[in-house]
Amino acid sequence: MPEGHTIHRMARDHAKWLGNQSVTMSSPQGRFDEGAARLNGWVFRRAFAHGKHLFYVFEGNQAQPVLVHIHLGLFGRFRKRKAAEDVPSPNCRLRMQTDTAILDLSGPTCCEVMTQEQADAKCAQLGPDPLRDDGDVDLFVQRLSRRRIPIAAALLDQKVIAGLGNIYRADLLYAYRIDPLTPARDLNRETVEALWNTSVWWLELGVRANRIITVLPESPKRLPRLKRREALLIYGKSHCPECGDQVQKSQVGNRTLYACQRCQVRTQ
DNA sequence: TTTTTATGGTCAC
DNA sequence: TGACCCTAAAAAT
Image (cartoon, rainbow, N blue to C red):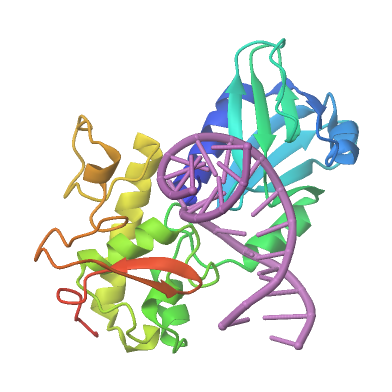
């Protein structure tokens, strides 16, 4: 269930659980047999994320580290297992096991071995990631300024900004009352910077809370207990929290968009 | 029990 | 634009 915050959180957690340990790797399902066999017993050195892409760095018997690139897609999922006796799901693509932890991966769009150079090339295709130190708001501004597509489609385009998904896009546009069909390049810089800054804040909060929360105005010391519904502004709702009108569901950028036609009227 | 849905993405036309 | 890929849980029957 991944937008960017999930992937960055996984990079952090997995490095904590597996870091600097020799990892026993297998592919119960069989579709990653070759990769698992190649890296079996290698040392998990570190993990990093760019947008929704997750990378592990393994060191073994070769001069250069070798990476595993994982993209969860819509259905991909990791499960942390308690004991080695746990039987993996029949669709478990990859099991990584150390003396202290077991991680099972199922349903990823992508799970492949690659070099650092290939990983760099993969990341070079992506837009700036608000969660990364090298995330650059100017690049976001520039990429948006060249697109005529609706802003609601642009926010899902990983070449424009990396890490946002369907929930963050709906709530970002709602937060600033932006008409979702506004051409991306028509938005003024002030608005684009606001979208970026709020993305940074929401994604960081998402990593910390390990869930999407878009309703908190500033960082609280203690996270309130929120039910899923209460944590979101408009995504998945039937009525606008501001005016009470029915929320419009439509398909924009191939995904279901939730928006309020009465409130979201800004076009710059 | 079957069908639908989901926080994603690629490819062909 | 639509077909398709991947999996699991919720919703519908």
